[in-house]
Length: 127
Image (tube, rainbow, N blue to C red):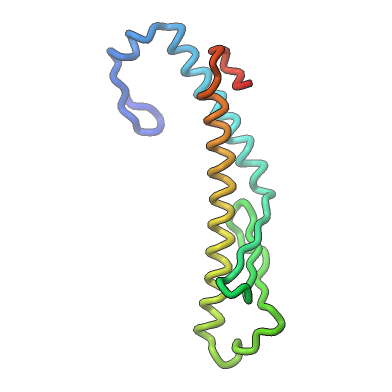
């Protein structure tokens, strides 16, 4: 059997687990999917700031990875003379912000999965 995620599951192992265990696994899986979808909707409103290595450039990015704002420190004077350096600073800031968004999303999804995998009572509540 192949899951929606593309994993292949041995049906003999599933039979040995028993109906009640399979029901719990499926229930937990469905609950995890719902919780992750809800959290991803919430994270759309997340806004993070990223900075270039020198702190001269700043980027604000939302949870959908959309760039909301780019800014250069007012003390930066090379932007008229060094296009490559200016672009590199902005790129660093954008990449830093996107990395932070990805970390936040990954942390939230991991927390949800851990909450359900640590559930000892088998009721799927995750609490």
